[in-house]
Every structure is written in C-alpha cells, then in structure tokens.
Length: 356
Image 1 (cartoon, helix red, strand yellow):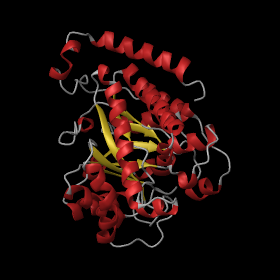
Image 2: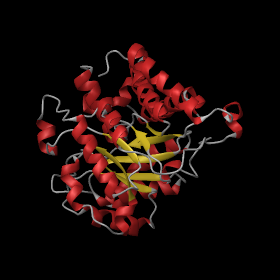
Image 3: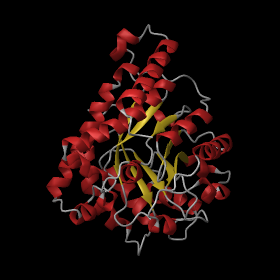
C-alpha cells in the first residue's frame, strides 16, 4: 500500500529535498555508457542496482542530517514504450523494470524509516519524445493513451505519486495529468523552458499552466520547473494565482541552452554556490517553492549548497505516523538531527568515495 498517495506531505510549507542530475553524474562522473540517458537499465545488473542504491542513500542521508523530508524519484524517466523499444525492451520487460524501480525506492524508504521523516515515492516518467525538442506535438488524447501503461504500472505499486519531468508541450502535460487522475494517482507536471523562459513550443509558462489546469480541472497536485538554469526563467515568474501552482525546482547547473547542452561533449557543472544563491533568491520571492533538487550537471554538492541557503520557515516536520514509530516518540529533534548528521558524515567518508 502507498503511504502518502492521498495526502502528499510536500504540499505544506516545509522544504523537501529531491534528486540531483543522476544521468549526467552516471555519464560524466562515473564514465558509464548510458544509451538514451536511460538510468533504469542499471536495474538489469547487481552492480548497476547497487550504484543506484549508493546514489539515493547519499541523498537520503543528507536530507536526514537536516531533518528534512525527501521526494524519491524512481530512475524511470526513459522507461516508457517508445524509448524502451529503442533500447530493446518488450512491454513486459518495461513493466518489470518500472516495478523493480519502485521496489528499490520502497527498500530505501524502509532503510531510512528510523529517521521518522516523510519520504515520498514518486514514479518518474519523461516525455514520449525528446526532452529538448517537442517536434510536432500530438493531441492530448494520444498522450493520455501512450502514458497510461506506465502510469497504470506505478498505480499498482507503493508509489505515492507520479512526476512527469522535462515536459515540453501542453497537450502531453494534459494527457499525463488525465491518465494519472483516471487511476487515482496525484501527479506533478514539470515543464522545461528555453533561455527566454518559454516552453520549447513557444508558449509562455503562465499560459501552459493555466491551459493544463483548465483542461484537467486542476488535476496536477502542483507544477515544477526542470532542465533550465534560473537565469532562463526568473524574469518570467510574476505574481498571480498561477505562480502559486509552481512548488518545485530542479534547475540545471549550466547557463547553456538546450541546443548547446545537446551538442556538449563535456560536463558543465557550473558553480554550486551561485546556483544555491539563485535558489535562495527565488525562494524569498516565492516561498511556496518547497521541493528543491537539481537537473543536468548538478550533483550532491549543488543540492547540499541549495539546502544550506534555503532555510525552512514552516512548522517542524512531523513523522508520518507516531503510532508507527512509537519507540521514537520520545526522541528529541536534536537527537534525530545528530544521528542524521553522523550518518551523513559516515556515508560520505566511507561508502561513497567515488562520488564528488
């Protein structure tokens, strides 16, 4: 059974951390061959699965050291039909990898259950086409039918929600939101924008969010932005009801455009401190930005810097269920924070010497 499907804890005012640039870390930090940027293929081997565990454990240990919740995004951004077929997977094989990915997230959440902090499991999905180039967008109904298969698999697991990242066009966002609503899954739509702050199709971010909300009766739980640098979109963020719908941010480390990143043969990891400062500035303007992580070019350094700059302003996070954690009920917040900090230090020093 899912834990938070009917009450997402990140809809409050406290900061939740989330993933960094997993795929760019695997390719450029670890020198891995990752066809189509498909990290779900690591689930095919023991070594690959263990590499994913190390990555997520560091993320969770850092969040625990700060006493913050975490949104665990499954490594399934490319685990949909067209990309899977290109990589040689059958429909049954893809469904199996999506289930395995969520099972790994459940395993990790259980491993960190002692923290009593909310850890939300998200079934991550990506666009049908390229994450930078929308091509000629299809009808919303076609996207709904296309994404329904992967979403239905997630709905039969312990996933709490669906997150659609690097979405380039409105019809696909509408289709995904409708497919998720049909099976009772809360969904998050994360748009990507070009250097002018507009979607790759040319629509404004405001128009895109308002169009999806109008077509789906506000089905998305909230919206995010990803795969763009803050300098690309900060000027188009303006006060109004629509901006309150954006509650998360996973920016790129690089100032480069999508076209430049697509052609790049080396990693541009930018400046973690400068990126963190940009996040801090945006959060001061828009305090509803509560789900914070990174996208292309970012690694653990970037999110750790972002977390240090962006302070919580809401009430203390409560355990998901005090009854389920009765032995921890009397443990003070200071003790939990100290335990998390020690775990984080031990994790960095001993278990992950190859991650920078």
